[in-house]
Image (cartoon, rainbow, N blue to C red):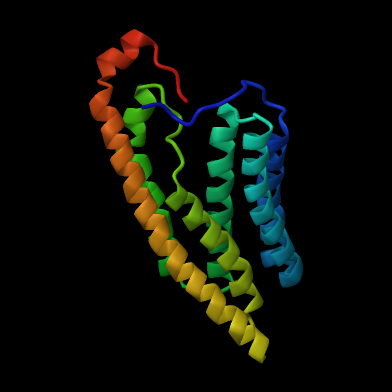
Length: 205
């Protein structure tokens, strides 16, 4: 079992450029949220980040521009947005710190269990499954609603309720997908002993 299939070794592809733009949006979002406290513009950055997350995957498949770099950049950008948003919201006291710990613990668990063994076998990614993308989608679209829900008007309340519904649903899916990834990783580790991986020169997918 290898990582996801890829079409090119190129770095400068449209999907990769979109992923780079998403990564550059992380510090901009934090500056708007924490320094300027310009919530509307912070929401705009989050919405653009969520839209490019969908768009780069669509373009990569349609234009045959799936790349090894893209397989690293795309989930990295997702995690950076989720972590930055959670930290910024917790600092602003929009969400509790236990939510930050809950979602961060999922990634810590993955990176301290299966990833060291997978890296030694030449893997930099695992095939992305629908549940993982659904979890990311739910969280990336929950955060703008939660931020828009800061206030006392009726529409603030509606946004806050909808946002927290997505947060709870997304957090559950995030952990469920993490456990599935751990299961995938264990299967890879069992099927590809370290000695065979070294001898065959297995490349990450």
